[in-house]
Image (cartoon, rainbow, N blue to C red; front, side, top):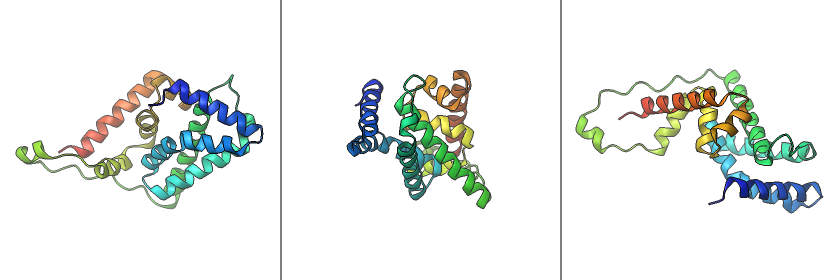
Length: 182
């Protein structure tokens, strides 16, 4: 497994190569960060096609603004994650303005205790439940779970305090438990 420091070093090198006119630098950035970002965006947006569109928009922005990334201000990975988050949130806002927000899933009926012990939660159930989690809680939760960022990194990227990030992630987990409770 790639360590965050190693990932950042490789991302810095790839961006440096791209800035010097070598297209393989961009390919390396996509290879390094694309799968993580796609997973994050898929969970955030709930649709694979939207996640792929947001990923393309993310890397189009990286290409357009490659010269603006400043290592003294933040990390390359953090910069790209922030771009991805912003594109994902823009898509959500556009979608919400086009259609009304879907109501949260109905509360589960009282389960049979014997059946509940045998029940396992599917990934599809988690994805459906994630759609009902408010976006202000979902973003830090997904940054933690999909991008494997620390609370401090999430706080920096979302411009919130570490305590608020921790509270948001805790609340998102509570809501998910409620929505998928057997």
